[in-house]
Image 1 (cartoon, rainbow, N blue to C red):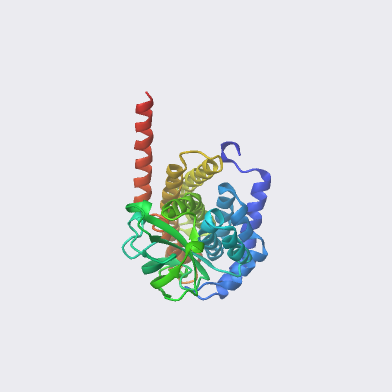
Image 2 (image 1 turned 90 degrees about the vertical axis):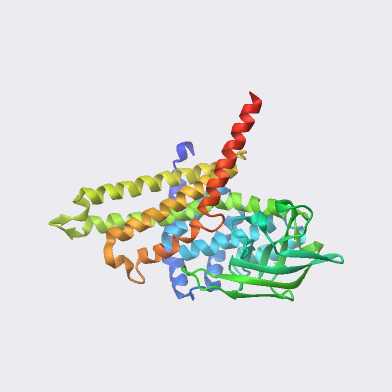
Length: 378
């Protein structure tokens, strides 16, 4: 993919995905209940083979998939991404028994996965997790809270990160696969701005054993970061998809809306604003593709590139959608309008999977680390 320009086959595939998203998946999304897991939508994603693609794609293909689905149906994109986020640790770090038990159902859309990392006092600072895994004979008992967990409390299993105490900070965290029917596990839904299923979880002595560990005890932070490094560029792709949808809607509106004796597009203030929206969207798209390409190539600077991609793309999408609303006027504020929907959807990606401030911290740390290494080498 020289210069990050898509080939003919890739362009055609993305076009097919955009059409499929709007024509096949959007009607299912509209029938769903806001804030609840839409299982018919997940089954459709499974039947279409799109959930399978999440587990077999490289980072670039995952970005194209998420961007294209987001353009036509944000709910479908989010449902697909959450399955990948919750189950990817099982794919990468799970035992053969864990993968055989859970992944086929996830791929088919029959089983719902969730990534349970954030806590009331430890959101973006993942190394500050407090959920305790207290030793209990051959296993542990989980005690504490998780919050802002997508697909909770309706998921069928959770990838849970808890402190087993092998060391301080990030080195004392272990990842567990916890089925939803474990005794002592409960949860409740949270009423959020966007219509995603998000909830909190309570762990009251939930039993887990060695067979539930993902990877090795004390290595859970690495499991989490491996997942986030893959999915952070594709969060950027989700944002780019929303920005492109908002931009196209704005082009159509301003080209046809008459005002002040002509169409809005003839006003320099409008034309310049649209040009800025388009330029920022294209820059974000290219940075997302660059990060995805680096991941697929096994580049050592993936954490920096992934953070840059997520940061620029999510901030850009917020800018583009906000200006699209302004150029549409009051009509865009009406419930059910595309931009009203995008305006609620676009805010969360600047926070989840590491807030924008955290991405800036990661970028700076990686830059200084590289500069230090360079100084030593000289």
